[in-house]
Image (cartoon, protein in one colour):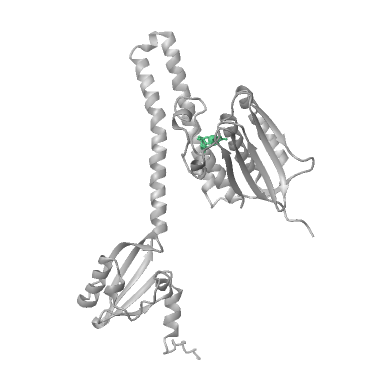
Length: 354
Ligand SMILES: Nc1ncnc2c1ncn2[C@@H]1O[C@H](COP(=O)(O)OP(=O)(O)O)[C@@H](O)[C@H]1O
Ligand SMILES: [Mg+2]
């Protein structure tokens, strides 16, 4: 029976080098005397200078890591520490495993950058805190009104009508929140594929205008479509495009003055299909332009939150951003305070057939 000989690593250490350099984790080896004997590519990327041959205690700025390396070297003690370090001006968090080398010949540290995990964890905690706050506010008010009714206010028809009305308003707000949270979860999930097809943006806009016409009329706002006579095709998901447009047009109506106009403009620009929603309402100050796309972010708390029937959830633009990005498009805002706002969405046009 013939058996193939296993391939042995070449004695020159080229394999070891390749393996170390292929690692995502940064590796640092110090010798018995505390000098840096070996580093890999990931570690070199963290330092601005070549640290090999230098004394570890002069190079490692983090005290806990320095001590852990010394203990591993001198007392053969293995440890795990979490350290924070500034890398090119940005704070990063590393999980470091420090182990002694055999026969007290030195120590090795393996550093794993856990900053993205930490960031995701913080975002998740912020989200839960925000969501529970948004739930608590209307619930507290519903409970307050209901208790007052039970305690006797029910006898007075005028008061009880007013209270029941308030309860209904807050219930609607909770319903909007539940709906928006579900939409956001779907928009953010990258697992569920967003199938794209070729659609005429004019048709999407017409659907949205028809659906929102009653809301606009109620607020004395006129909706106008500006589009070429020929189809403006985009490679996108029809449902997502209509959701995006609905959120933008709803915002434009909400922030318009009575007798205002909201324009939905559509055009093909080079390789992109462009959708624009413009209003002449109160506008958005520049310092909020980036933040309005964050979850739960609202500009004018006092005016938009609370009692109003159209008080938003602050999730609309976050949903817009996620959906647009999942269609490989972009969304931007331009606005002059007091003179209105314009939201522009760009999607790809179907590639021209040869
Ligand atoms: N067309 C607009 N004009 C003025 N402000 C706007 C407009 N669209 C959005 N905003 C601001 O951006 C914030 C976030 O919008 P959005 O995410 O849709 O949340 P919501 O509409 O639920 O408040 C709004 O609270 C509002 O302050
Ligand atoms: Mg909104």
